[in-house]
Length: 496
Ligand code: ADP
Image 1 (cartoon, rainbow, N blue to C red):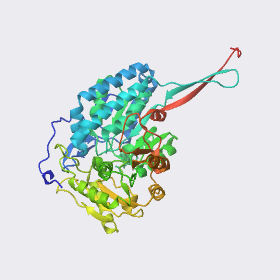
Image 2: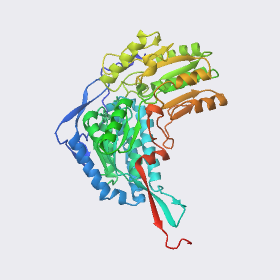
Image 3: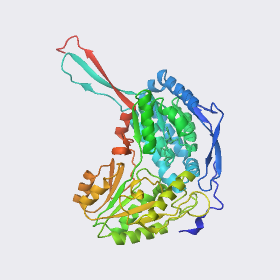
Image 4: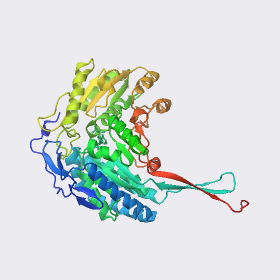
């Protein structure tokens, strides 16, 4: 591993942290309790800032503001075109502040700055422009019913959307949730993840600069069991996080008012390398599929299935590639991997590595902490992994690649599908028939063939089985934030 990367003197970004309060009804305010919590720099564990800590009372205040903005307007009562223009103006402002936002994202999350700046910020802007495009194209149907009736459907916003997002892609998850909800004319209370509260507050500010009326987008920083649970008990819910927390959120939704919920949860995605694959290319893509974003992706290709005919060569080359991965200060150019988000995740990853080394899997490289500070983990590769091992079953959420050998397509289909998850899968082959067979047989919400992690705004994303409910992005995501009203009008003269 690159040794230049041990963090003794972290690069401090040139960013002035202006917003640490809650954003309620268009204003930055302290939490009702006056409490604050620290958010940490994952490179060192040092405190970056203290942030207002919202709990149930703040959620109540935020919901009241969102309710008023919905019931009394102006948001849902504005013309769709007025909403389009505000969202587009916001996207322009974010584009202008891209560098500052990317630096703040890296500081709070630990992801490589180049990744945040060159790919995530442009995608964020693209997502909002995409949703702005939908805002004035949402309409119902005219329905030919039996009898003397004129029947039409209206696609109306649901009301106040409660949105809970995770820490692995703080800005992208903000866009996946806030974009469709606003395009459909809802108002929002968003709870950010306690690990990464900073960027949402800055973009919230920019949204108001773009002309968003007060109360339409309220942002509450805080913890899951307090602010998150209060939100889940309160309104229509969209949630992204682990499967276990998703179950809690759905239970709270059902127990309170049967609000509809969209859930985007965990995964254990297979990445299948077929016997005809160009091994070098397969190694690179499988590496990206797992190690991207420090392995902290719900859809990470965390079970690498390799056909027995190319298995030995693949393992050898995948290990070499992992050893070449540059780990270090995410602000340094050329760094591919920063720290894990926090000490809890770091320890969880290390526990899974330990369980792997204690099993009959073979540790090919890595397996240790990287450096002496912060939450860095060496890129780790296990070969000879079997389905019944913990590292093949659980979501590790870290830079740990598990390689499994398979014999034929039916064998790999059966094994790839033996998990409670069904978020995504990768298939690497030149054979069209193989690609077609696998794409249809895999029980996952996305199948990437000869590519991985393609997150275009127009492509739906979501889980089969315990990986979630509903779809985000794309035209499908609008359904989460709309309800259909049938308007049936008796005709005076049925002949006409
Ligand atoms: P992870 O384990 O990856 O951090 P979580 O599912 O715990 O994922 O967290 C994702 C989001 O869910 C965060 O914003 C977190 O604060 C929130 N959360 C955690 N527990 C609850 C809960 N009981 N009710 C509502 N939200 C929660």
